Amino acid sequence: MNPGYIFSLRVMQFAPIAFFYAIFGVHTYSASAWDIFSYLGTIIVTFLLGKFFYNEKAGLFAAFTISVFPLVTKYAVTTGEDPPLMFISSLTILMLLYGMKSHKARYYTASGLLLIVDWLISYEAGVIIAFVLIIALYYSIKRLYEHRKHFLHSISKSFREIAKALL
Image 1 (cartoon, helix red, strand yellow):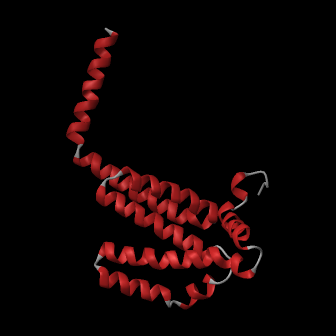
Image 2 (cartoon, one colour):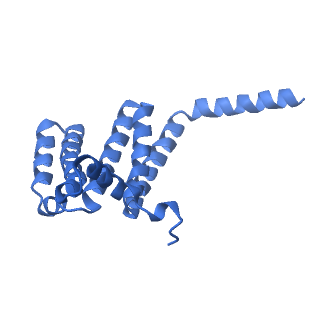
Image 3 (cartoon, helix red, strand yellow):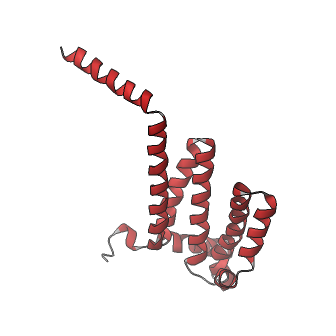
């Protein structure tokens, strides 16, 4: 890949580590702090997802399960892309679900911005991007179908106004 290409450098792998280096100095713990915070964030987001779908007990069980999962705990203390990617991806899905439930633009905006951050962590985020785009397309088509009468009426009215202005 061309090194001049903006996405050849995964900024969100190195920028948080550089931030922790600036705060705490160059050390093993400051290098893995981003992954540790991402691991803790994943536990919180997993609780919120369980609470969103079921209730608080399911959220606590899901958070406990992810907190003792061996591979997650192993990668949480080493520098890598897996814990941040998991945290940002799950937060993206959570924001999308909150947006679909409340119909507030800020959740959709947060989900889109987190998708960009996700892509800047790893190219493996393309799977999450495809998933979010398919879900967004599905719900857009569903809302268009539900409101097609109003949509078709506004389009026909627009064409009539354009034809009236041209004649």
